[in-house]
Image (cartoon, protein in one colour):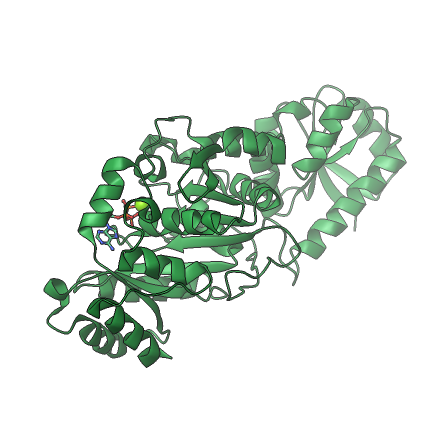
Amino acid sequence: MSIPVVTVGSAQEAVVGGLERLHGPVTVVRRCSELAELIAACQSGLAVAAVVAEGCEELTTTLVDRLGAVGVSIIALTDDPAETRRLSSIGAVPAVTGIEAADLAAKISEAVGRQSRQSGPVPARDAGFADPGAGLKLMPVTDPVDEAAPGGGGQIIAVWGPIGSPGRTLLAVNIAAELAAEGKSVILVDADSYGASVSAVLGLLDESAGMAQACRLADQGLLDVEALSAVASPVFTKGGTFRVLTGTTRADRWTELRAGAVSTVLDAARQLADHVVVDTGFCLESDEELSFDTLAPRRNAATLRSLEMADVVFAIGAADAIGVPRLVRGLAELESALPEVSPRVVLNKVKRSAVGHSPNQQLDDAWDRYGPGVGVDAYLPADPGACDAALRSGMVLMEIAPDSALRRAIAALVCAPVQQNDSSFGRTIRALHLLKR
Ligand SMILES: Nc1ncnc2c1ncn2[C@@H]1O[C@H](COP(=O)(O)OP(=O)(O)OP(=O)(O)O)[C@@H](O)[C@H]1O
Ligand SMILES: [Mg+2]
């Protein structure tokens, strides 16, 4: 069967003429006058390949991903070597403008064959949950935080938790700081598309929205490790230094965190650092994926894509009568959205006044009653004094409250065993750990 192709660009006449004279293996089903028309034609299922004969500079990662998600390969013509490299990096197939029709047809057939193999049983690179009409990109989940990510590069640690400010940012920031203090290279990524707060927590004056900048570069095919390190601000703590991609400061800029670009940023981040710690948003809803407009940005794409790509996922909830049921429901949503993810559950802000007189026992009972089928990995004590002091000064816990049970419990999650202090609270937590094993 002949491959249906759409074309665009004033140079398309020569291309189309050449392809038609071949009488197969491709058929030009529409000549479009502009890129928007070509996109619409692809989305309506008219073609499985698009030849952009002119104006390939307008192609972005997002566009190539979205068309890939509806099964369309893009072949773009250019004679500029830099543009050729850029096109390859965003997933389009470059070809020179004077290409022979038979060679072009061969490139089209090859690209279409590759695309259909990718959308088969093996999930495509970017065909993730955050992209509509595409298979899941499921990364293997490894348990110990120190293990190298499969396929080389750094490890992605995502911190997720349900609505209600359970402590995602506190945990992500302090995990980054603890790993940096161990001498690891670390990049902290603020991917919360609802309420970015990493820069505020770290007392950074920088309003540069590093994550949005990195996503923009990724979308244009211009993001490499060097460009990433230029937009990732260094954060100096007493324990060590790590980099941070600050979040979108204005809520309405969430549209910049598109799934394809987020993948590219996280891939580049793991080339740059041993550990990529991602502070995600709370919402996992995918209703919007049912939208017919497959080019529309998705608000939860950054969270979903980060969780898909993560090697370790921490799911954190507040340890009280509101937070625990929310976490239990959230874990069920996580399971149905991304079944391959095995979260490590963390209960935060554990305090007697919220749970009752024997807080850890009460929490244990409640957890068993709700029965989400996954054990609690760690209990983090409430420590408003340390948290407020950290926020006030823009410091991390290891600087402001190095001996606090909270800091030690966070360090124990990601670093070699640290000595627990001997407070009765510390002992109770240890006892609970043993109970859960
Ligand atoms: N263990 C704790 N003890 C006391 N206060 C805490 C603890 N953990 C977090 N907090 C405080 O709770 C508030 C919310 O924490 P954080 O910003 O980390 O939550 P979040 O889940 O990222 O919320 P958001 O929905 O805003 O992203 C902050 O003021 C933080 O200092
Ligand atoms: Mg937060």
